[in-house]
Image 1 (cartoon, rainbow, N blue to C red):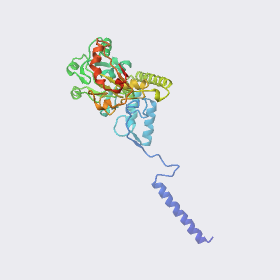
Image 2 (cartoon, helix red, strand yellow):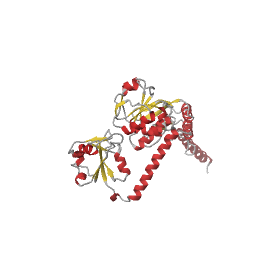
Image 3 (cartoon, helix red, strand yellow):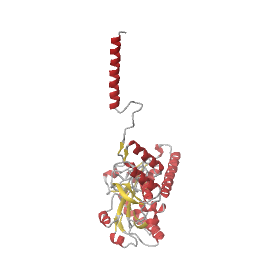
Length: 372
């Protein structure tokens, strides 16, 4: 080849190579040695997943342990961000987050953040050693995991006598400070021998919450009203009380029971044709739904379907005689349930008479499939 042509060809190759190098440099490197780009994950915890809703729980499981510390170290090294790993919620993953997580792992006092059902990321002093529980949904699991030792009061619906009897027996004193499901009697609260530092509620708010907070008490909202949400709630507040091991044992017990029920249902009812659709009623003229107490039990027992009003704010919906929406529902069976009479005396026949007339227009009632 002519020497001049060879020189021109080599120069052309060098120009192309230089251009390629420039492109690779601009894009951050070649395919084989391109460094990892920092990632940003602003997703929150799923409160219905059963996980621990404590920031710093970087792998979104049920525990705060060395795996979370390791995950945070990786995020620091890559200069990446994950909101659930941001233990102090300052918008950066750094050594301060690692320090808080290590303090939690070692059960040392520190300020932490949890995911509140109403307020989102919320700071609270860890561990909490004084609280008040709102409603049976909260009280039963908290007593089960050993939280009674830190409970300086409770509230119950005035008719929640069975739980009240249990707590009065355990306390050997009366510390019920409410007048309704979600209202705390502030005057009774001020008369308690020990004023609680935290009020734990299962609902999105208390009707007099502002007054309570102005008195210096923090209100914690966790979802104790539905199954998976309650598992996260138990784990989370159990952790905040420094009772994480007991809380996780409680959750595991509940999950094992549910798995056992599921297995028995599948073995007994192999096909959907063997199952029935149901509607569950209680409290005279109320229909329960999947966020309530009775429909989940009906589903667990093998119901093919049950009235599902998950778009409603309450755990039930009230109705009037002949309401079109209730008469149009295509249920096979209607179950009327109540828990009256455990600790007091109720005339079940008279109580039923007050309720039964509401249900006489239902197709299940007229078909003889009305069960009390």
